[in-house]
Amino acid sequence: GNSVTQMEGPVTLSEEAFLTINCTYTATGYPSLFWYVQYPGEGLQLLLKATKADDKGSNKGFEATYRKETTSFHLEKGSVQVSDSAVYFCALRRKSNYQLIWGAGTKLIIKP
Amino acid sequence: EAGVVQSPRYKIIEKKQPVAFWCNPISGHNTLYWYRQNLGQGPELLIRYENEEAVDDSQLPKDRFSAERLKGVDSTLKIQPAELGDSAVYLCASSLWDEETQYFGPGTRLLVL
Image (cartoon, rainbow over all chains, first blue to last red):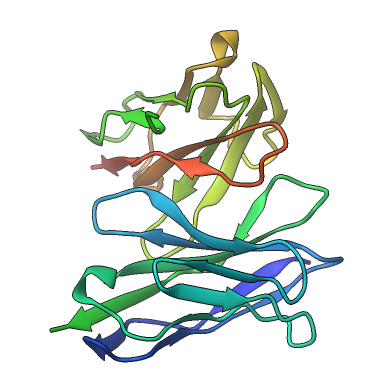
């Protein structure tokens, strides 16, 4: 079946550190891949997406590249800020279905 | 452009009581979703509407949950009677017909005592 696996949190980093949050997936065909972010007390916001292999999604300094060969979509940022503290969700969507398949989320804590 | 609006933001009820959540999607979005999110987990789809038609309700616990989307705009999700295990955040999202991006509301945090 289809599934998304994220690295467990919490991930705690100091400000200006390099961030990687791992995400791997299992799916038939070639799904679209997403990263959503959930700030404390707020709803889910789309952070970035990629719809085909080798696509790179980017937003707010975050990047993720759709790697078909490793079935991965790791989230990276070169220099994190305290305001990046949130829960990050990786998700996939098959082309034939509207349903999003979600990872469990990774809580990110950035210390000043 | 206004985002997805949900109300109430928080609700505390006793078990066996009914509860209802309301959602107003982004204007022009034909597809509406209700999700349930338990603590420390990703959202779980409950039901998806295309206009006023529920096209996927396979994961909706129909013995106690019901939903409607009259006129294909606003939607209401109801639980009757609520159980302790229903405590969660209920999220509403909407998207355009062919648009992949789902836009989420802030959610309703339900606590059943």
